[in-house]
Length: 294
Image (cartoon, rainbow, N blue to C red):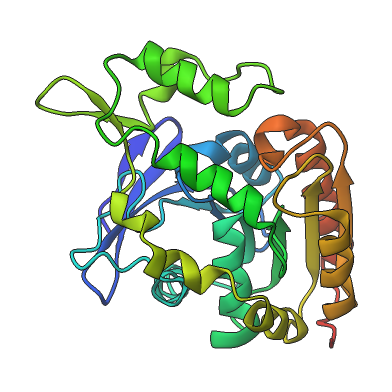
C-alpha cells in the first residue's frame, strides 16, 4: 500500500486478490479504540464520511473510509462484477489490513455488504456493526428511485451547475448542502468536456442489483449476527419503513435501534449531528462488552 497525504488523512490503496485497487483514506488516531471501517452507499464515495471519520479518529479510533469497487477512485471491474459476494470479499481483504477486528459502519449498499459478510459469509471478522438505513426488507420504490437517478444522465452534464440541479431535483425536501466545488469529487470530466458520475455504469445492471434484494438471504444473515449491532434509520426514509426496522429487530433481537427525525435515506448527510451522536453512544456502550448471541 502506497501512502500519500491528503486533507489530513493518509491515502492508501488496497490491492485485492481479484486485481482491483481500492482507494482508502486512513484517519489516524493515537487512541486505543477499535479500528473503524466506513462503507458508503451505491453511487457515493469515501468522501461522504469525512466529518464522521474525523469525529471517530478524534475519539480514539483509527478510521478507514473506502471507495467500493466501481466507485470513486477505486478500480472498475473489468467484467462488470459488482455482486454483493464480490464486494464482501473486497471488504474482508480490507479487514485483513487492520490490527484488530473493526467496527464496520455501512450505509445502504455498504450496510448490505457488511451484513452479508458478518452474518453469513465470513462471520467473526468484525467487532461491531452499524447499519445505516438498510434492513432485510427493502422498499422496491425507494430502490427504483435511486437507480433511476443514477441512470438518468448517461451522457453526463454540460457543467457542474447542471449536475447540482439534478441532485437538488432528486432531493427536493432537503436544503442544498453540496456546492459545485464539492461535486468535483463525485464527477469526472471526459475528453468531450462533459461531466459524468464517478461510478461504473455496469454497477446498475440487473445481475448486480438482484443479489442485494433477497429478503430470505438477508434475514438469515441478520439471524446469524452474534456481535453488537446498531440499526440507524431515517424516519422519512423511502427505503426502510418502520415495519421493516421492526422485522430486523425480530431477526436480530439484541440489536439497538435509533430512529432519526427529519432524516431520509441519506441519514448521514441529512442529520450528521444526530447520526454521530448515535454512533458514539453505541461505541461507548459496547466498549469492553463481551459478544452476544442471537
